[in-house]
Amino acid sequence: MLKNARQVKEDLIRWIQGYFEENGKTCKAVIGISGGKDSSVTAALCATALGKERVIGVMMPNGEQKDLSDAQRLVEVLKIKNLTVNIVDAVKAIEKSIESESQFEEVCEKDSLSQDSKINLPARIRMSTLYAVAQSVSGGGRVANTCNKSEDYVGYATKYGDGAGDFSPLANLLVEEVRQIGLELGLPKELVEKIPDDGLSGISDEEKLGFSYKMLDSYIQTGYCEDRSIKEKIDRLHTLNLHKLIPMPAFTLKNKVNYTKEGE
Image (tube, rainbow, N blue to C red; front, side):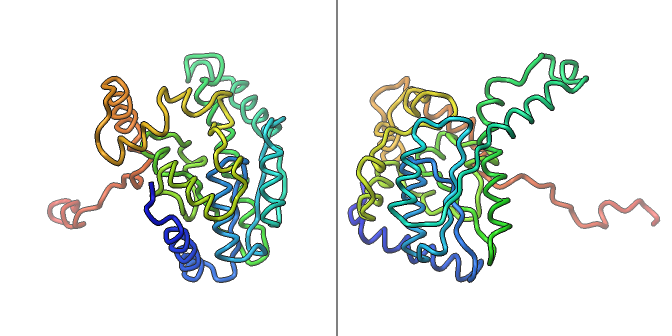
């Protein structure tokens, strides 16, 4: 829990202002709006920091989205410009293009995309959509990453999907801390305290993870978890998903002399 959520909120606002001062004085913040707490808090922070006229919300249902009304309510509350892009046709088209390729079965040794691939594909298409919008808006745009520290710790984000972006206001805030900031911003309580789900797998985050965010937040802060099996699961997920958090590994070229053939 944050001891002074109001101060952290003010610091976040100044941080966003500083980012745009250095990385796009005329740019707008482009944010994927899901109706959940993370995108709601990120959008509200940006609207406060930059002014509502410099924030664009993009709603991206994959066919029908049961909680799309929550996303629509948020953009109405914040009075930000917004658009809705249904990605269902793009998702189906890519799946069909890959699976119908004549060499697919031979290469992948199966006749269809894996379930994990199908779950993560919409998130990657959504990020491509956000960048397409950002590069098209007048003055340019910068895409907001809406992930929080708790999700990042166990890799609960899609690499190059919702795990991507240009700036990340919530990356060092735990789930409960994000909720605190949301309430400080005056967002509707039902949006801030909404049960989180990824909008992809059909179940809540906590059901999929097998433990609560409260337990995860506590473990991240203290290093202690009284349930050994959950501790081991969190540790395993963290280790497995570290590749999502570190910069892309790159080969470093040594002194070129070392690669020159003798006598050259």
